[in-house]
Image (cartoon, rainbow, N blue to C red; front, side, top):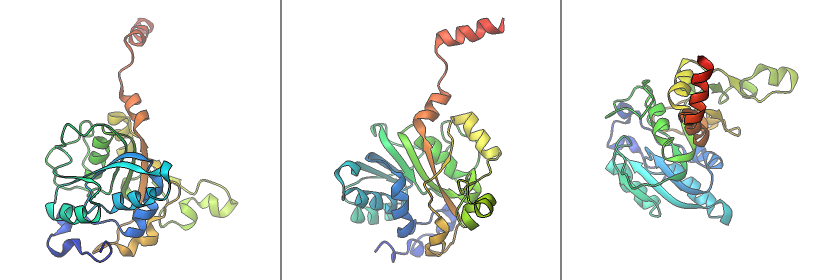
Amino acid sequence: MIENWQESARHINSIAGAFFTPWSLARDFAIEVPAGRMIDLCAGMGTLSLARWWRGQFTQHDRISEVVCVEANPDYAAVGRKLLPEARWIVGDVFDLPTDLGHFDAAISNPPFGIVKRTRSAPRFTGRPFEIHVIDIASDLADWGAFIIPQASAPFRYSGCPAGGWPATRRDGFGSGYEDCPGELHATLLAQTGIVMQPNCGIDTALCQQEWHGVSPLCEVVICDFVEARARRAPPPAEQSDLFAMAAE
């Protein structure tokens, strides 16, 4: 059902920038998601959550204890409830979440890509890409994040690149395999939110590029340590601020 259900049969997905994650990519993506409580933002029919839930059923220490899926489209959520009835499904906008969600160990998402209409902005990020607004929202909800975003929005290149994107890997036989290419978007994200998008363990999304329905996007899986992000954006302790003021005098 996951692979054969056509999400665009009753909806024009290109308008919302929403396309469901191929099952093979969802299974690889699950590697990057820790155990515990998990929230899936812009969940679609819950493919990412289902893959991670199933992965956790094989080992006790790797299990997801609770899943919350947030999806604005009621038709998608109705399918999701059948696929993953263990989850709490919330039909609603990620920009207007319930206040009783609590805190999560992980937040995940394959959000709509690019310049997509939204009801409001994230708490801190002021740029245009919808997917970055979702990551900013997630940073208030969880300690860890894993996201599928367009390669153009990532601060590195790996997927679809020869030998992982870094020429030195092919030439000299060493290197991380990731080509670092942070830009203005990432500098703004760090300055406004404290968030750094980091490379994953080695997931090449190009391997399933032809498995998407109606599109063939080149993406990257980025991971975020939100504990570190919140520490970066926290104001310094009062006594530290006093020391800075004294040093400036």
